[in-house]
Amino acid sequence: MVIPVFRFTARYHWHGPQRLPEGGAFVLAPNHFTNIDPLVVGTAVWLSRRAPRFLAKASIFRVPVVGRLMAGMGQIPVERSGRTRLNDPLGGGKSVIEQGGAIIVYPEGTLTRDPDLWPMRGKTGAVRIALENDVPLIPMAHWGTQRIMARYSKKLRLFPPSRVDVIVGDPIDLSAFRGKPLDQKTLLEATDLLMQRITELLEELRGERAPATRWDPSAHNQKETGKFA
Image (cartoon, rainbow, N blue to C red; front, top):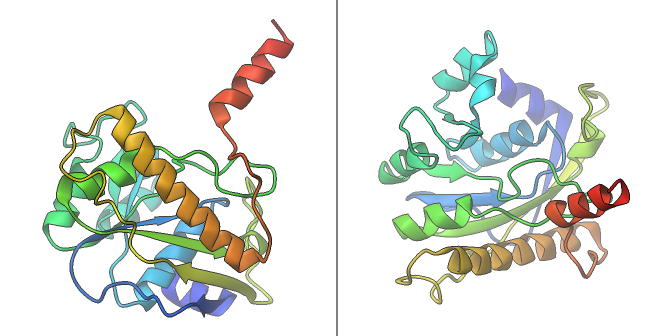
């Protein structure tokens, strides 16, 4: 049901020569700024002849009808507490990788809080899956989904069709991190490299420069808390 709808409502414009690998496992890491992103990105991956598999909040799987659809499409539930059905927050992703599949992980973990929709500080899940399983980590950026659904909105704008620009980058060079203990320092350094590359791709699509300092939700929350201390 999703593919025909979004092939109609999203006019995809691909940038650059890079395309997703035709075979083999990899982790795809896109930017994330609207609730409709997974459907638009999933359709883009499907158009590249790969089956999209997402790590998704487990609460979605408890929604009537939607949950059954998500499970039927092979999406992977992740509990906010850090546990999945496999008692491992990344275990479902590993099983997809072992089968040679492509898994989509939003490294920001949620919609960006940056006021201008630039990528914010990332979390380490995408990098961890790629390093633990020794598979490519591919950055991706898109722009235009906010015309289909604004950030935090529940209202879809399906007509007229909206332009969605998409760019897939070269796999991140993780050679400096492979073989090292996957401690927090290593994972954060690799994640920062990933977020930098995603931001560069989005700059190319938007034709403008991102802020020099990436939005940090924890730092922002501390500032807001301090106002009322």
